[in-house]
Figure (cartoon, rainbow, N blue to C red):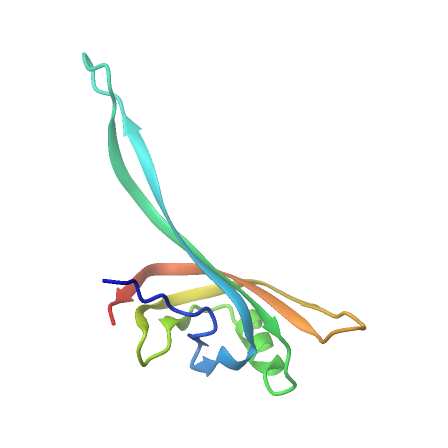
Length: 134
């Protein structure tokens, strides 16, 4: 059976209920698990223990006049905002979605005279990132 790969342009992202999909050019969701090594007396090998799980979300894309306020509102908010990071489209092929809360850590805007304005946003996940299968 052949693999069904999901095209990169098939994605959906909302932060605080605001759809950012039309603006996106790239994005990365990172989940980290702190692994602790526990030495045991009399043993030559240590044992691995799962620790805290953390994560981050980084996105970049094109700036639209309609969405600058959405990005700025997410940045200035000092409370956790709900997010949904859809892998693929909500129709086939669909890889499921991560969801939870996040706090926006940084927001930057850049321009190039030969191109258009772009943005980058970095956020820290707050609590558990819940995965929902397709």
